[in-house]
Amino acid sequence: MQHSLTPDEVDQLRAAFPYFANPPLVDGRPVAYLDSGATSQRPRSVLDAERRFLESANAPVHRGTYQAVGTATELFEGARAKVAAFVGAGSAEQIVWAENATDALNIVALGIGEVHAGLGVAGSERFLLGPGDEILVTEAEHHANLIPWQRLALKTGATLRYIPVDEYGTWSLDAARAAINSRTRIFAFAHVSNVTGYLAPVAELVELARAVGAITVLDACQSVPHIPVNLGDLGVDFAAFSGHKMLGPNGIGVLYGSPEMLAALPPARTGGSIITKVTMESAEFMPPPLRFEAGTQPVSQVVGLGAAVDFLQQADMHRSAAREHELVQRLVAGILELPGVRLLGPQGMADRVALAAVSIEGLHAHDVGQFLDEQGVLVRVGHHCAQPLHRALGLASSTRASVHLTTTEDEVDRFLDAIRGAQRYFGLEVPA
Image 1 (cartoon, one colour):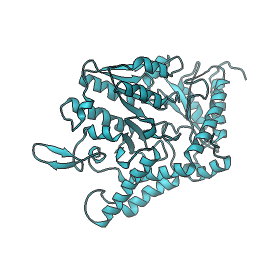
Image 2 (tube, one colour):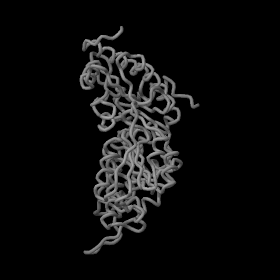
Image 3 (cartoon, helix red, strand yellow):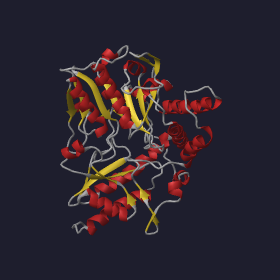
Image 4 (tube, rainbow, N blue to C red):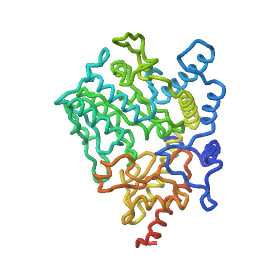
């Protein structure tokens, strides 16, 4: 097993973040930021990379012939190569820039919808859907990996089916095996649940899908920032993740695709810079990834994301993941000792990554979140864009704490203490 980051190394990492070097204070005490599952703080190197580009290298990429365009384009495409290497893509051309992960997932779903409308490209017939075909998801999906497939099913006449969750909000390989059949054409699921932290057995699931000829679409938003991920080895056809959850800027997301799938997928959004030939009657499109990057791109954000990848690699993803595992182990163990507190997801550390969500008997999550905020403990409350999952658990909302490579043991303990404090504050009878 990899050795985790030491406390001194964590302190050094925190010093690289302006937010942690000069944190907001509540009652004179630095806040405990436990909401990286929603958005991560950014190191100075990421902020500086974006600022430097805007101050000294800003130019329209892939346009014009003056030297500054070449410099900007090299930085833009260099970041693509960094991201490709970081997630195990075979080539930079497998990385498509999107606005965010939600947008990346929609690129796939809307592109398949274009095939149904008769607007495919060479090889697009593999995406044809119709009555009798099935799109499979899980009941635990973030809305971003559910609603696009709901709408695609309505467009095409395919049936949307889902793998139900158990009483903990998780699902199993056996449940997937029972749900996948010869009619399954698309299987979309999260690598790590943003509510339960459940780590799906991706390679085995891809094998099941391939056996029936189904396309796999992976929501990797909560995995890529926290654990080493090699999408090429996992074998997924498509994957999506966000820059702002992995120390990068807002406004930039990533769609990964296998070369064959990207080549066969038509663009759903069209316009400048994605074409090879346009007449008044028709258009021919560039090969991937440029085919999917219509219009002016978020160039400074892309450069910032490249810097975020540099930072994560220098921190060592294997050792960072080991560190986060220890923190979540401490978090989960503490939660399980709290009376009246229900832990969602795996009831331990097996198959769990980066986060833990709870429901407190007798308290609404929003009240809990407000109390924690007053204690300087910053967490996410609500349904976390996963209403079906919460409904299956008999809940309207939950309180989620998430960790990152900069999180400290003290911050985890402050969360646990604040939960006890909330129970006392609202007059719940719990043991001292």
